[in-house]
Length: 433
Image (tube, rainbow, N blue to C red):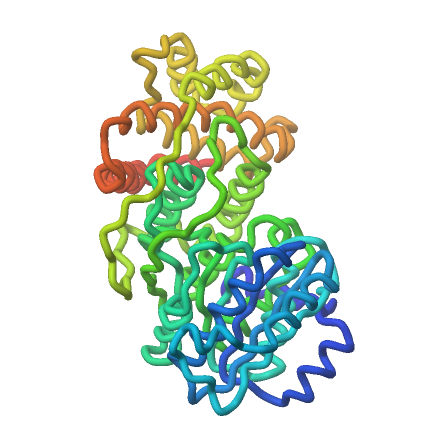
């Protein structure tokens, strides 16, 4: 039995009684499209329309439900849904309305505030309706099209996949947490090359829903902050068949990783480190890696430019060295700590954090997070990793400044291979400790 399977199911439902009665009155559905939302009434109409058109075009023979799981102003969300009642967008899209109209509902989820609880409500609704398949969509998507529904659902229904992750076309500096941490760790630890392990748009099978709902994580920080990487890790470790679907561009607000390092870094990295402990028996035995199938048409597309202030990131790294040095000395192997201090002395012109040093440091932090070394808290350990992450991103940007996104992608994949090559360093220290 997998370690996580021994955990009991949370007894708290994320669905209120009124929504449960509405679902029971529907009786059943074949496909559910879930949209976790927090005060996104201004953008959610676009996502709902794309979902409804996609279901009508690609799955007209199936009964569908679109469920918005709202954590904020439910009245505004329902008002946005009511504004779509005339269905004029069907005529404009040359798509026939299905004989059985897709149900569209919004519910105010119960429980811990966060995306994970919003998703739990959708999974519970899917279980009540005994759906065959479902997908999850971010509520603020600007680049979604009806074709996304086919790409996320068809692999489940037609080819019996258990989990479908997105494959986006992104600018080389968009998604640095994914590129520098989530993607290479998923590749090297669990042996699966899943390009977007923390993508917000994905497809899921009936069996995966049952497995996820059985886990006792819904009242924890995983449900609040790390739900996407948790789902990917569970799907891999519990042997669900996984594929990727090419969705093209995902347009959202650009963020310079040096100016706006949101709490996402601490949340995602903390979840990844927690999962390394939970699933250690899985990844310790994994050798090598294998690619993951990709469906869809991968067109040539030039993502919008994203400018990064390298000088600012280097400054943030150097300005925080002394503050976190005492933690570094406890967390890092002596040689790794010595080399990091050498990096801190480099000028901006020749600044570089070697990929091997970055990987060893990240592995050291993962081990320290598990052991809570010398009384250090989990938060202290993650906080001390942040400046090193700044240094890594700055180094990557400097190295790829004159490369296009496809060339930069080769650099990212080469880095993932180095993660895989250095995995014995982590295994040796993990077992030793």
